Amino acid sequence: MKTGVTVALFAGLLSFSAHSADEYTYNMITGQLPNTGIVAADVVRQPAFTGEKDEQVQAMDQAKTRLDAEYCQTRGGEFVADPGLIVYDKGVEQWLIGGMCR
Image (cartoon, rainbow, N blue to C red; front, side, top):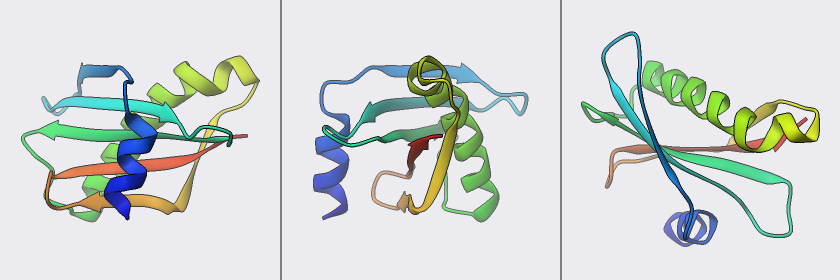
């Protein structure tokens, strides 16, 4: 189920790279679920995430910056994560961070 939602949400969208102060390299794909206000980022990191809680915060910070710039600023709001749309996928070592512009 999670994979189907991720694929539907991110099919055909752009990816992004940035360096953090901790010398991690982040990549992400962002998107908006069609016919909804839900926006999300699929965040990967090198070295890879392991699913730790502090890594979730890193992924959320990276996602917020990108989603604010791509989706929320033009709507006069900012990205607010939905705890029910934050998922760590062990199979591909990435965080899915979803929410809405408010």
